[in-house]
Length: 621
Image (cartoon, rainbow, N blue to C red; front, top):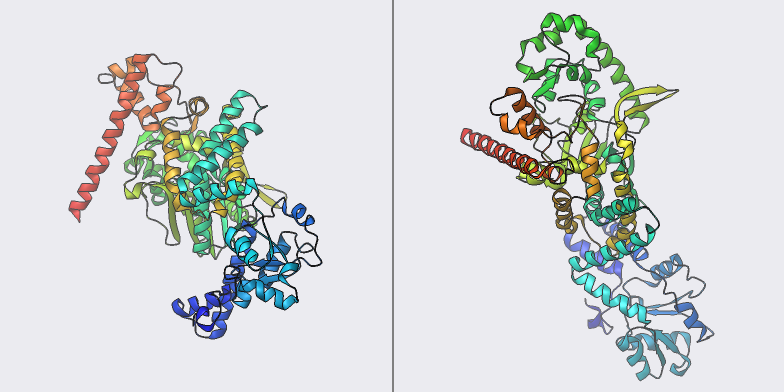
């Protein structure tokens, strides 16, 4: 029955409302279950109130102007007095206001004036002995004055302005994001004012791009709670940066009052986890998982994948007609590669490396808390989730749920204990444009600690063995950019929580920022991209110098000259980021125009081929 129908004001306490709501929508077997869940939900609501409320800086000095024998709180509020007292206590106001009256407790409110009467009767005071202070012009001023109470309206100018801003922000997410962005950029300029111009530019670029990574980290937190994962592992290299953002965004390890799973970085890579991930030493069938992704592979790279050095097998290679630096097209079809893998010397060496690496990786995962059962969440920037697949094979009895900023189509069968979710761009759903060249995002997310290649024993523990190209240490753009993103996370975080912003609401802005970074990148990003070689572990091997664009001569005569043509094709296959051509400092205008034209034609060819394959598959079905 409605409260008003029984002679009271239309007031209800939170737990009463939750009970009624649960009885309507939840299939709970007993009243005890209803009461228990209602209590849990009310406690969650209190936590949210604690996170969003604050003490007005002028309230204490104001109260000293109105000395009284007794100071109480008097509130039209949906939480009972016991919960409101806990809220005030959490803000350090217990000594200032110890007790009071709440409308939902007595089902009488200030709007009707009946709560004032209840207070006077309960405390045995007359209206003229009562000074009431509040901010609402009707409930806190007009009504009490009608009753003979001395009413004081407390509306600081800054609070009125803040309320207006909040009303705008609550009405429009776009306006809210714009407000936070302006505030963050102003704080960043002040923070970075004394820094060198190059660091300042990279730092501010990170601040502007921050919502891309904040939206993703919010997505990770939401999904981790929803999927009930036991722990979150951020996979290096890019995971080192993403974990910094995650920790800055959720400093209390909670999302809207809900506890987030424990999280940490994990020193892994494709090459450090591939070989040891199988239940038996590597063979031809295992290597097909690599060749499906890299249909061109150098012989030396094949050895690297198996943890071996090709130089130690020169006699075997010579007997098979193979050269260490030879680029093999479709290795799965080359009979020489088949004979190499079956050669006793190769199999014995590969099996020995497999055993060592599997034992070290197994110990490392145990030491990092990656269990053999349960539900494990992994986080990475993208692109096919192959490290997650490798970990899932290492821990077949655990469930692995992956969270990615972008995902490409899977080219290999997915392990049964793997599930993958994407926040930004999903090629499986037809979103391909931003994935034409994903290297820029890898550059700005890369870790200065390098990439994990193997593991070694250090006393009683196993630690990652990492490598980093010397030129990487000469460029501070990624680190400065990341520092800007983490700085912005601390600025954005409280507002995202206060306004209950979800990752879905940030997604459009996130993709827009990703597009901007890809098409109109900061100069420091392009410079780092060109000057720091790309490490190609599984395909061509070694490091690829992206600044060495094929010459005009090679582009023009590539139609007739096979060596020139191969150089041009290999370059186009290994990088397709057009701004690296547009902003290349060492190219003439004709050279730049020719290169950009070839890049665009290559992308059109690739998309056309994919479309044709899709149409063929559909006809087959």
